[in-house]
Image (tube, rainbow, N blue to C red; front, side):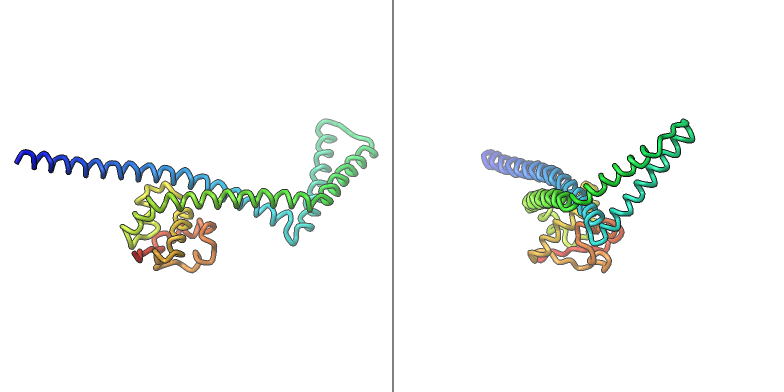
Length: 223
């Protein structure tokens, strides 16, 4: 009889150890997921900034912007020279004023001539950011398969806001939606509700809309 009890105690102990190990492993996976999410977020932010910079300086109306900023440059230099003259009494000969604006014009023309090369250099940086973002996202998906996804399926149906609360707000909502969208695309989750204004933008860009409508976005498991 005692041997049976000892055996039961051993089995119970093994089960508890197994649960403890699973909890530790799940915690470690979430910690790694958070690290990769931060890398993905940084790459995403940098990519968005460089894409906006490319659109501003090299878009369809970029020539107008270049000319406008050159005009602003002339005005700033003129105001600086006037300030030096009025405050410090520094006055330059006319030929030095002319030389200064000529040098400024030469610099602008040189930059305008190298516009194509500058655009290509920026595009290479954008391509590198996209690669880093995709690599980080793929690593996030691998980690989520053993941590986030099982929890979402177990708690289905669950809203994006409830999931954020469950995870103590450790992840950006855009990151969670991007990960869950992979499960939706695979047919393992169904997005039951999504406000129209959120669906118009790509998931990784809809930060403000996600914060506002997180309680309305609901996922249901098909498993």
